[in-house]
Length: 468
Ligand code: ARG
Ligand code: ZN
Image (tube, rainbow, N blue to C red; front, side, top):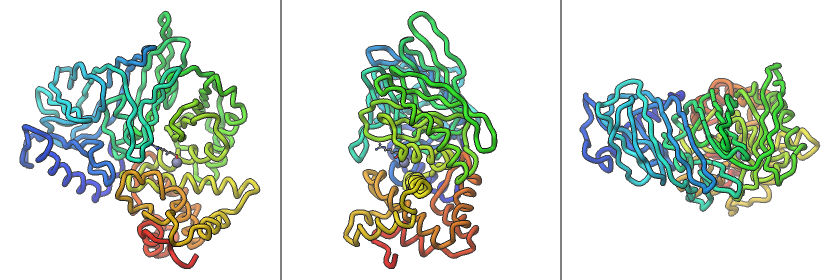
């Protein structure tokens, strides 16, 4: 679905499209002009240019997945999308697995696989709205990131869990794997009945057929594919409701791996933290919440939409962090991975705010300690958080230096303007796309200050800013 798109982003995507089509896309390397052309096989992202595809806008995914005890799946994904221009062929991203057949608008289509590209050629070019259904099976494997971490489909002793950031979604369903194309989702997952299945959103159906049960979850708000989550496991399931600050009733679904005990403390913190964050960031953007706690080997938590995944029983800091992402990252989503500080800097700053509000260091003291402890030679200052060029740095400077940037902004514009900026950012870009450029513009509009120089030093310059 079309996120609020900047002209700049569109121009970049178009340029990349032309290049990629001329190179790898194959037989119909058509000259631009009227008439159907192949959609590009990349998104033009600054760090993951090959992930994601061009030429269409995904609206909705329906992922129907059968999980077997041997770890294999048999699945189909139906994508409804809108072609941006007539397409003679288009791509989805899919890594591993075996594709059985592809139908476009109900008719058998031909397809080729080329690395992680699934290139689909329909019998007739698609125009406007279309639907593609991919049937596939096999044993999914995780994806190894440039920084060496694992993501995507993670097989576990009791099932599997998916944690997709940044490009792991393609290990278990064919998608347009870029945060600039958000869509709505339904997941219908069938697993042995003694396992539980969780995903994003609301549970709309659970039906048992003998030894197997199908759980259907629906995510009714736009979601980036890196936030899509299903987990099959030996869970205890806890269901309750909470009231938001505005009095809205939200379902709280928590899935806790049996071996972790009931996690009462953590579960009860969730509604408290959501309300606490609402008072700072504005209304909670989604229709449900909760948590998924599992002894996952990946070593990180992930802000999967509505319901983050935690590797073990979460402490308060990580709960505050992942729940803050629901505003900053999940609802307001960077259109380019190079703007990841808009996620991690904000979620880290939320942790600082929580600490300050609960008897710990003020955010200013946290900032000062980091600044003092990290002299000009420290790794903290290189690369700059919004000037990443190596995808292995995705989960690096965005966190601490990103949060420090927000503290500098606060000291510059004052606390009132600062929280006005945070709230307006969440409200104006709700369920949409975002860029650093847009955030700087909003900060300047609200504060009435010229802030370019400050942001340049803090976000774009690979050195310790002087004078703090
Ligand atoms: N976004 C996650 C967080 O809140 C971190 C994800 C790390 N992912 C990875 N593939 N290393 O902190
Ligand atoms: Zn984070």
